[in-house]
Length: 157
Length: 388
Image 1: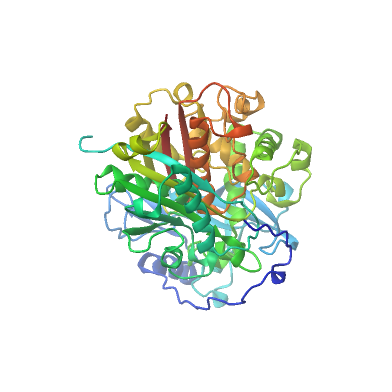
Image 2: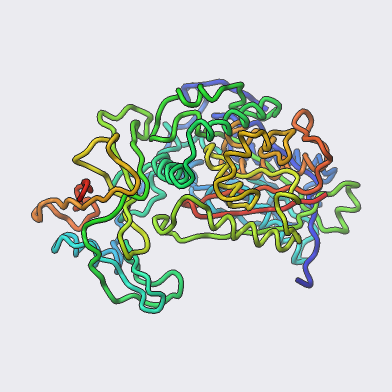
């Protein structure tokens, strides 16, 4: 077999090509309700399965455990708990980020699941697993029914 | 379970694993498949079916990659299937091959797994940025390393595990790989080297992670009748298991892989294994990151929850320990061409049980071994139990 120790891929015999395709992703039935609530009312909503007594956050249109269709919506509040977190220091190219970004999995009381989001208004060394955080929404005129309508989560009392 | 036929592995093949190989994906598939056939003393015409395992089309950059690779896997004019369950593909591929033969439909099956990640330019990380939920996660700019970092941190927090303990896995596997002729990142390193390597997303550092690679692996599967004709030492597929957890990975605690336990229990039940740590002589759990080896040892019920770092520190998981783990050098040492890396683990167990692992051979005449892979969005487990 061939063995090439090449660090620059352009030095191998090659053909440069791409797989160009753009996409428009629909938010979906549950996703649209979830993000519209964030945009219009600044509320984080879960979908409750009456049979399993589980509230999914983010919400789903159906219960993945029993397959019931979910139509009951519950406001689960803005406060959650840091379940785990990371401090990203390099980007997808391996380049150093100008400022480290803190990403956390945030869980909400009484809900199954949680949201991945950024943590702001604090420093990496101050974050702890188990600490309470609160959603900070963008001003309503800037919201677009996107998960980024939540600017970040900040430490809460 | 009645009506099920016993299935043997009678040959294995493996290419070099490198960051970038000259061969195309088809050619890599051919190299591994041909090697497995030669090892079995069989010809392509003896293969009655072909199963190909390969990960996202975006790596090779060819949509319908299964079709593109088919001739390299020896599928011309044969019943052919491509399977894909993310990182779990490499061990799932022989499971799919197993049911081809166990069903009685085919006497033989050629099982091939391939990945050519170097086609994705400048780095296959770009293919990983589109694996997340397009509505809830991609707008945040998620990247693969970060979700591993979240899981690793949760595991460390739950059991109060230190980075030093986890780094021992990287040290062991990269050293084991020094004896593997296909290895890409074999090295003698220290815990200090791991801890001082570049921080990518805390707690993940450069030397906690396996490299991206090109490579292919293959197995020849045969029914009992055929196996006994072609070899005196078949290795039997005695247990198979697979399971997927919630697609919302946020729905799990992350510190423990339930889905691996579910897959392992299925395989152990089929193999009649009651006490895994006592009955498994050697194991190749999936180790794309060092903490994943520990995580998976626990999920595979090879030790108690949170106990894997202690066993590692005591040397139990070394080649000459009581429960050798990743004697091949694993993904951390040999390399991680996703689907091929998982099948490399099954090849290793095959060679270990036949006493053909050369300098990597573990002592003690092993009779029962296990390989496991893990994938999709951190929630898929595939397990195979082999016996001599």
